Length: 190
Image 1 (cartoon, rainbow, N blue to C red):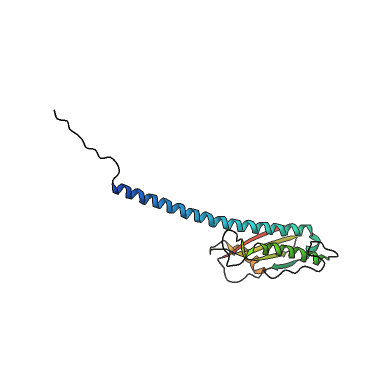
Image 2: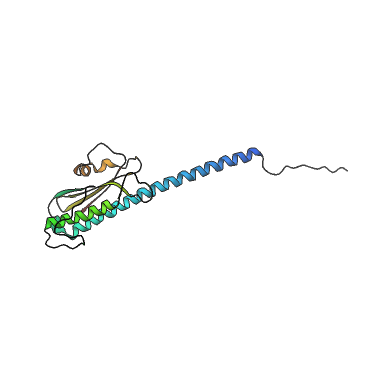
C-alpha cells in the first residue's frame, strides 16, 4: 500500500496580496479625503460661530442702550481704525455721553471685537478666524434690527448669498458675486 501524499499549498498568492493592497489603498485615500473635508467644515463652522457671537453681542448692546438706537439708521463697520468717542476714556469709563455718543461707543467696542477676530490674508491655519470682516447694522422701522457680518472664506463656494441681497446692498457690498464671501445675518425685533 502506497501512501499518497497530497501536497496542499497554504498561504496567499501574489495576485491576492496585490488586490488586497489596492483595496486597502482606496480605503486609506477615502479616509484622508474625509479628514480634509472634516477639517474644512470645522473651520467654516468656527467662522460662523464667531460671526453669530458678534452679531448677538451687538444686539445685546442695542437692547441695553435702546434709547440711543431709536433713530433709523445704517452703520457699516469695516477695517478702518475705530475712533473712541470723546466722552469715553480708554479704561472703559464714560462721563456726559449723549445718545449719539453712546451709540458711537457701542459701535466702537463692537468694531474692536470684530477686528479682533480679523486676520490678514497672508495668515492661514487653525488660528485664523474672520478674514476681511465687514459689519453692518440696519435699524429699521417697527423696532427691527438687522446685523450683518460678512467675511472672506478660504475656498470658493456658493452659500446662498443671493438670499440676503437687500442687506448686502444696504451695507455697500453690492459688488459682483464673490464666491469666497461668507455672511451671517441676524434680524430681530427690539
